[in-house]
Amino acid sequence: MPHNIFTLKGVTFAYPNKKPLFRRLNLTVPEGKVTTFLGANGSGKSTLFNLMTKNLTPQAGYIFLRGGNVADIRPADFAKLVAIVHQHNIAPGDLSVRQLVSYGRFPYRHGHMLYSAKDRAEDERMVDWAIETCNLTDVQNGLVFDLSGGQRQRVWIAMALAQGADVLLLDEPTTYLDVRYQLDILHLVRRLNREHGMTVVMVLHDMNQALQYSDEVIALANGHIAAQGRPDDVVTSELIEQVYSVNLEVTRVHDRPFVLAV
Image (cartoon, rainbow, N blue to C red; front, side, top):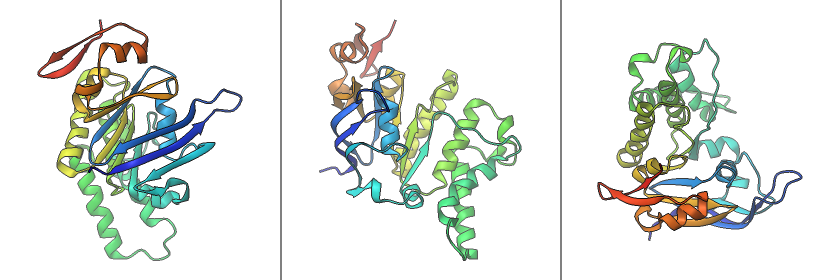
């Protein structure tokens, strides 16, 4: 039986002076897979993402990471378990790619009075691995500011990889990128899962990209789970109408579901 990386039990959340977005939400996210949150604007995708990343705290209920309550995990320890790339990221203009990626090692340095040569060697090894994995070797000494949007996104992912966590959370990683770099990022995500065994949880707007690159999708509608499962099993015209309030046909391309979104 597969294990769950995240388990949410009875989670309720409301922004100040607004009605609850989630009421007693129960959810499991499987380990070892690529799972994508889908849903219309305002459905709660990013809020759920921020609850799982400890950026928001539920008013009621619990969020567990491999059985441990995330509320009890110190931020530095959480960063060793879960790497996060948010939708909006800013770096100083004079920062090199390698310098930014090396910031991913901060959880291992913070609070340590002694930092040995062995620790520094491990930092360098992880930074080298992250840079190589994200195909940034040729630009590692250049400025982040000088890179294209797609290259910058790979730098942020590399910084997350340098943390050494085996869980990667991505909030709309393809937003603002042209189609070439969107596919570049999604291919990287799939490779991280298949070749390096990482569990990936991401938020995407593009339904067809989610169907192509996900092992499991979780569709949100009005603060609840409308459907969860393999794309082949759960994505239908009826589900799309429930989630997005539009009537679109679902066909098959290369034996995968494909939404005719025109």
